[in-house]
Image (cartoon, rainbow, N blue to C red; front, top):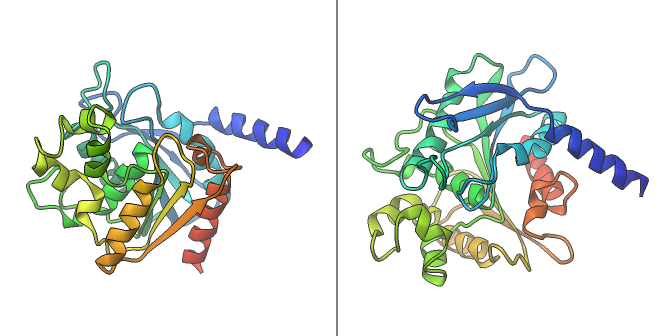
Length: 273
């Protein structure tokens, strides 16, 4: 009980501890990010964090601060990004959300900070998991696509409970968040899905981790299984971890005390060896 209380208190403190604020664009207030730096001179390996929330307003980068602070304590610099989402005056959806995530990642090259840009892991939860795999796949995009020609290339990617196969998700839930994000169905906009669906961009020539709760009722574990199967069939290096009940609820991936984050931290540590 005591350890649980300490863990919850630390998570609350972390939630209220912002990193140094930066802007990567001037069009909208959501084109912003926080940089969290560990102690030491560096250069530090970098983790880009992308929050979820169905690509919609109501959830912000603040929810990822506990994960950010936990990663900082493990020696990582963390770039916790915001992006234009759907709802209000955000103007998110295709292509703005994608363009913002790409610009945020590329802005790492503009920061005057001790960062090792050869070791950049992109890590997202839920909708952010989709965006993490997409951002890591940008090198495969044609030059006229949103987010093409990345200045900063990922060395690894992690999707926690991610919507990793957009087209299949849209077919299963025609009136859901994916169709709203893309402005319609895969049949109506096959070109958009070809550019914005991570499963359409495999293989990615970097290590990828997909981690999902077996009984996730918000984003089905099929989203990660489908991506891993498709990527491996094309020769990609993908590790899939499934969290068994009672752990692995959809929201638990955003907490440092979760089984999901413990697995992510171990995966990152193995890559640093």
